[in-house]
Image (cartoon, rainbow over all chains, first blue to last red; front, side, top):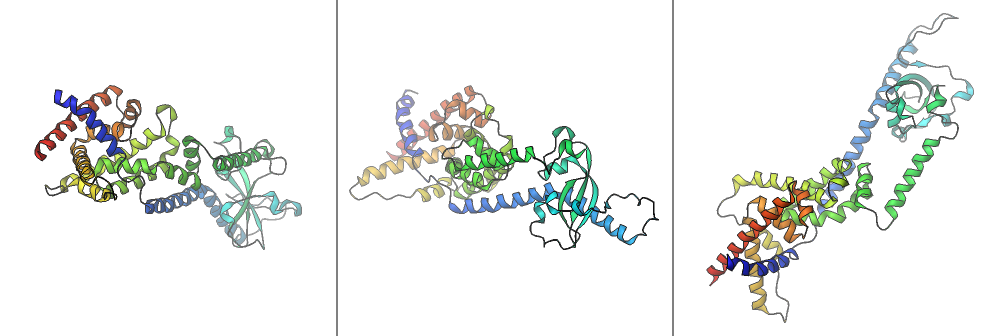
Length: 161
Length: 223
């Protein structure tokens, strides 16, 4: 034991030498792999975040298709209520600027023939789009207008007036 | 209804605050010194630059810890990668009140190291020399004009010590690596290992005694 005590200062000195010995950095290829993984996760996360909007847009597109193939209602009657209904936009009502642009629509072709579809969305999905909505309403649903292009894909969204 | 919580045409006060937040994050990244906590928050929000800065700041520490714990460069690389992948998904869970960022990282790396050592255990044979891989990486030559024999003796001694550290049971090895090789204090080591400070102190005392014993035995053999 006494021998151990004598050895201890020497051991601590050797441990200090061992601490300063050896590689200080991880090999560079690890950073490259992590960069790829980070980007993959980021893409996946944004996809997950936008899926409710995508689902709403898909529902709207289906409803639009259904509506366009159904009979028009008799004059003076309201159209049948569906999950999403195209609204007859007033000329000043459809300016693209009044819609909050959807990031996933950035790569889509420019709008030639627009259609505005009214849908009911959970407030939480509006928050995911970055639309400023009060936290106290997070559980509620709101009526929103989706701006669809000629391809049926959503370009923008706004709260129904 | 729309006016109450969504007013796109008017001032959009909350959008402005979001823009302010983005600008603040940008400034935070451009500032020469920003805290690890800030970087973790930013990388948790998907900021790649913040992640890279955080990685570059801490990768050496994590890599060396894994290498000194395992003695194998392939495990050290795997652990470093896995630890930072874990950081990507658990950055938001970091709580500065529960310990330092270093302790947080050591804790993650330690779990991966122990898992890797457990996985490798059945494949270790008596022919394996866990220090060999590490030593090969360390390989040094004496500089011209240096005391060649002194350097040789020193290297041999360090090699014996490295093997002795790797031969310690993991519970003792990790306190030696953290407290002696990484010079972390007892509190930080305890936080990383998820145990009491007293446990760290007693394990370190026991581990040093074991190392001293092994070194003494090594010297006897050499004589």
